[in-house]
Image 1 (cartoon, rainbow, N blue to C red):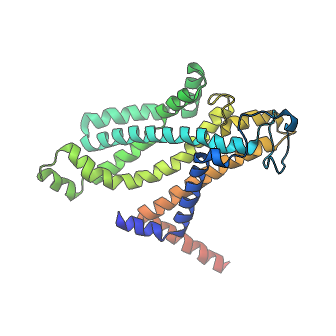
Image 2 (spheres, helix red, strand yellow):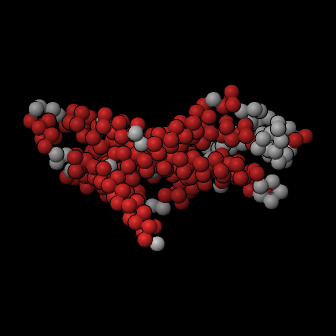
Length: 292
C-alpha cells in the first residue's frame, strides 16, 4: 500500500485529476455559499437572459439562475450517482468474492445469474422499470442498482480466482484462519485497489445513465435542480436559448472526462503490466513521429 501511495504522489497526472475531482465534489457541498441565487426562485423580469453580471450563465424560461441551478444540481446528480455506485459495487464485490472463493455450485449459480442479468439490455430495462414504478429519484436509484452490479461481480470473481491460488492463502488456512477471516484480512485488501479503478470510472458511466433518464423525464421532477433534467427543459428552447443546454451538457462532460481519466491514472499506478504497456506505446509513437 505504501508503494502505491508513493507512486500516486509522484504521478503528476493523477494528482492533478484527483485535485479536479475533489473540487468538482466540493462545489455542490458548499452550494449555499457558492450559489449567487436561489435555484428555484422565479424572476420573470429576467427570463431568458443570455448572461449578465448578475446572472453569469444566464437564466431559464422562468428567470431562474442557471449557475445557481448547476451548483445545486450537483448535489442531486452526484448524490444519486455516488449512492448507485456504492450499492452496485458492494453487491457486485460480495457476489464476486463469494463465487470466486467458494467455487462449485455457488460459483455456477452466481455466474449464471450474472449472465442472465447481463443479457438484458440495461438501459432499456432501467427505462422500462422506472416507467412502470413511476419517475422519482428513489425508483431511479433502485432501477440503476438492479443492473449495475454485474461488471463488478465478474471482475471481482476473476481477481479472487487468481488471488486464492497464492501461497499466502494456503498458509492462512494452515494458520487456523476461517474463510471469513481469510477473505477480509488477505484477499479483499489485495483485490480492492484494482476494483477501485472500476469504481472511479463507473462514476462517469452512471452519471451518463442518470442524465439520459432525466432527459426523458424519468428521474428528478421539478423544481428540483438536476443536470439531466435541465437538459430536458432546455431542449425546447435550443434555438432561442442555446445556453440552457450548453452549460448543463458541459458540466456533465467535464465530470465524465475527469472521473474516467482519474480511473485510467489509477490503473497506471496499480497495474505495473499496464504501465509497462502504456510506456511501450508512448515510445512507439515517439519513434514513429521522429521517423515521419
